[in-house]
Image 1 (cartoon, helix red, strand yellow):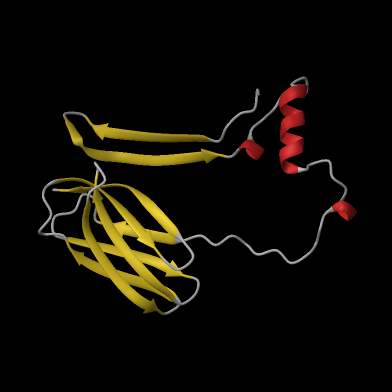
Image 2: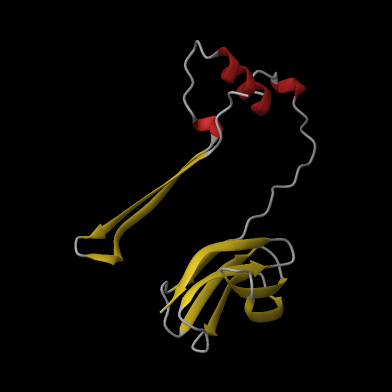
Length: 155
């Protein structure tokens, strides 16, 4: 009630006369803890304090072992693609990897499985010449993570 959600903002610029080619593209993420609240906005400040425990004394904080949530750092290129899709991801530990491509209506179009890949940088080149022109969604799954990409366009 009255609490602000995370803000995602994307800015794109196109060259005049050619709306198919992105000239500039960037995105920003503003998590709630970085929002600015006015001093007289008591309701939102109270919600923010309760969510982030900002007023909790240091000695009250549990210092037990906590595990850092793992994330999957990845990149795919080119986008749009013609024949070859390159995928890179950083594996924090040895892991099975499954890569899937789905059409926008959810149909599974391609599956690649690579069992027990070593920790470190994983790279895979995928032949996409058999895919029709269109927009696809890329999903990468490891033993501990799963990510779904933004749109991938096949020329």
